[in-house]
Image 1: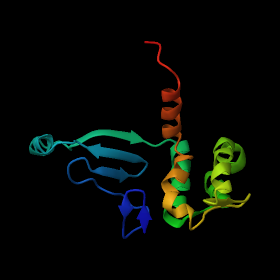
Image 2: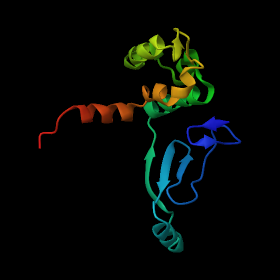
Image 3: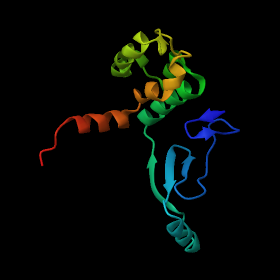
Image 4: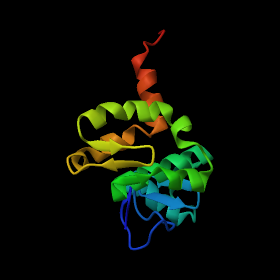
Length: 151
């Protein structure tokens, strides 16, 4: 089974981060260890977890993670499954993202219907770019960079 972090022998299991800069995934959280070996060992010697940052996922994050993992790992997204599991109207909630996918559909990277989004064989080479459409944090960052700074 593949997830966004690589390959795992179990689907959607907790991943404990071991090592410098490692990323862990436990329940609805992600954490990242410190980035230097010195700091990593110092924290372990003090009996402190070597984690320097982490986030707790919101519902929106969980929806988007499921979408991205489905596309990245299986190259297909059954829309009804997202609607059933998360109790959302996919087309309404992700209207902006679906509009953004039209160009990729024109380029034959994906096929879309009201029930499915499928990555074509040609699109598999660019699956990360396809998935970026659903990454709300990346979209926000791009919007911020697009506007000039006052200072």
